[in-house]
Length: 358
Ligand SMILES: [Zn+2]
Picture 1 (cartoon, helix red, strand yellow):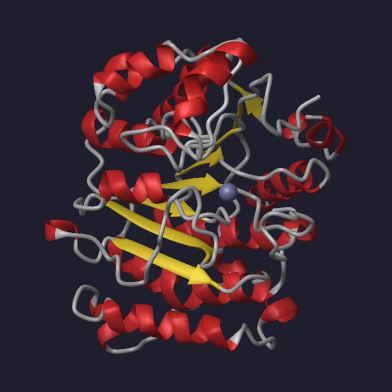
Picture 2 (cartoon, rainbow, N blue to C red; picture 1 turned 180 degrees about the vertical axis):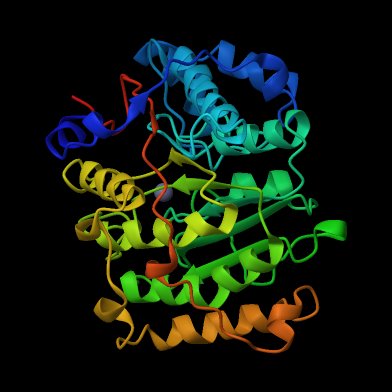
């Protein structure tokens, strides 16, 4: 929050109160047993050792206050989605922990409940949204979100991530394109270690832009994980703060600006707040918070990125006409209307994990 304050973001945005998530809304994507599990999380190291020693590898840790934080995090994204869909605000950013994109019917990978998935299902169920786009740019695959919407055509899930990070137990594939009526509505873009702004923006221009334009989402959710960013040792990639700002700028026009972002991963306590600040300032239209076309258009992505994109287009050719004819839709920054002037900010203080708030 210090960085957001120093950058003037707090003065230009609104902060909204929120409640813990309604259990009925959560139960639209989770079983009651999952909530029983969350309600009974251990609060001390001793309890933790006893409870989780038998499930090593799941990577979930809790302490006093974690259960409350889990419900609050989901509640914040739900509240943000209500405010955006009901047009009180154009864009909302829920700055929350714990993250959620690895959670599905079980908790794993520091995620207990899938905040974005719960809010997405909520707008489908209660706001009559027929087309929601979920973009996940965390360096890890959003396996939980994929799992929950794999057979849905109301939710288009698009995940960029590092291809060699099988975490927590995810094996993402370009061939995982959905099932049944949801065929073509799940898009994985596994990229080589070290991918950077040029790779991500190439994927946006070649894949995300065309398919999202064809999908015509009524609202865009963003699982905003920043662990593909510079300085993230676990992520091992090089997306810049301006790069994240540019990605989000490209998403804005897809749904007329209706966007709900929720924080996912990111552990570099220096880089993470800078990325969040750039993201918000990019949406506000600050030109120093995102890249200009000339900054990256003449640079080439990894050859593997180009091959992966071509493979995905081939896999989706029967699902999306836009890939049948091989057109290339470029989302130009200059085409983004300037309309966002208010935000919804949430600050959760947790007792564990890599919260950057001071
Ligand atoms: Zn991650």
